[in-house]
Length: 89
Image (cartoon, rainbow, N blue to C red; front, side, top):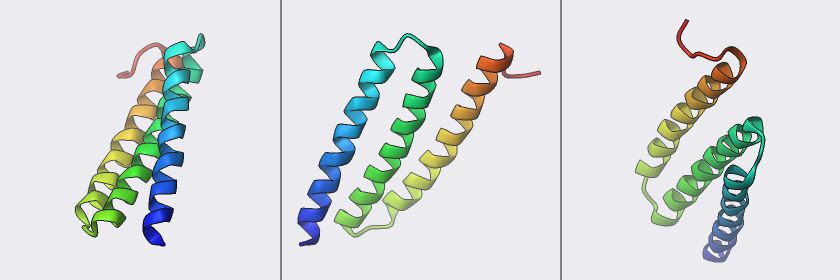
């Protein structure tokens, strides 16, 4: 039963990643692209956690934590660049 739930979750997050990828490629506004990239980061973290559950190992959870940290820093850097025009003051 858990395998069925995992495959359903993989499908849902895969569809969400495709929708976000569409928004990144075909959006006119830079803010929409930044939000879509942030949402893609969250979806990739969820997929990594699902792979960790499916494989039964903890290495994917550590990778998800690293990806979350880098995703947060990159989103803050994009937002700062959008507001001020530069990242380093």
